[in-house]
Image 1 (cartoon, rainbow, N blue to C red):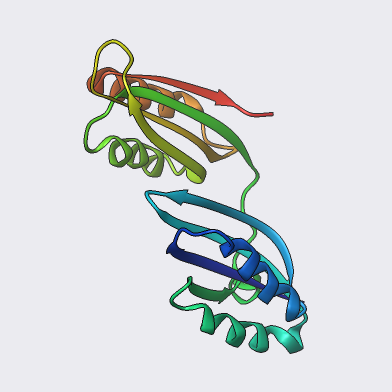
Image 2 (cartoon, rainbow, N blue to C red; image 1 turned 45 degrees about the vertical axis):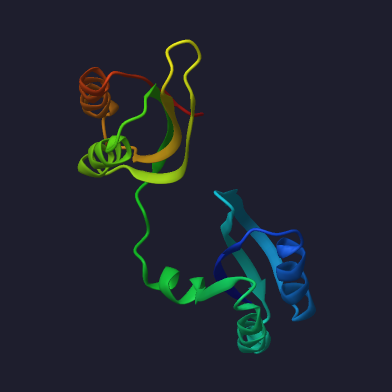
Length: 176
């Protein structure tokens, strides 16, 4: 089996997922996992599919006519992962952040994560009206991967210093 990673982007409209799923299914593919969302009128996401080796090129070619409806990039997951070294044992941590919206919050937080060797497994952000105070609140929830040999103390300290500096509430919780 070949594993393909599809990235999809298009103007949001009814039926996009069905159209994509129909193409995958009709070419012998199996929709394994996905993370799809509509943001600001744009539909975007990542889909992992498996397909019999002999039909991978056929499926890839069948996705091309969807340009205009969905822009789709296809890459093979199997070739890169076979050459990657085994990763160190790790654990996951959830970060939650809430505060007044301002430019640079994501850059500052992700800088600290990268500096300490933490990888972002999932990140969701949004803004909403602040009740009573006016203005916008920025919310972020992230699940990050931390190598077992990395202490969270330094990460927490750097994030707490940042939270004080940019006036946001922050929680760091290890997941089971």
